[in-house]
Image (tube, one colour):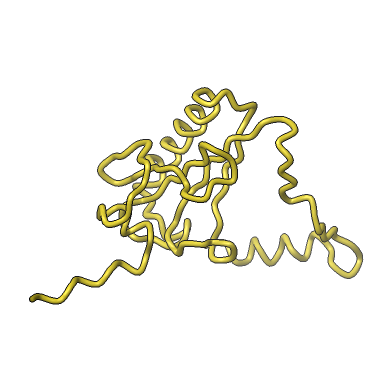
Length: 143
């Protein structure tokens, strides 16, 4: 009996390979969108490149327009299709990235839905941490 092939270490690569189930919303040659299996709200959709890429900065420039145009289409479809008041578009890089594969969240939102995202803790700029110093560090690191 031949040994079983190892499962992909990445859950999204397993979905793309058809080895894990997912409710697909849209699929192109290079992208796939499917419902999050643990949605923040029902209709929470993930957009994923089919090629394993971990970070947004690793997405090849020629795929960027298709990725973000598709994200725009999904944003409108999630809002219109579900009658949502709006949506939250989110990409995590490393921290809070539950699957180490680039994915963009389109999360339907409704007024009064109870989500309190990014309300704290806040870290304002002050004399010890001037905004200009942070801006200089970021500008200096621009590729």
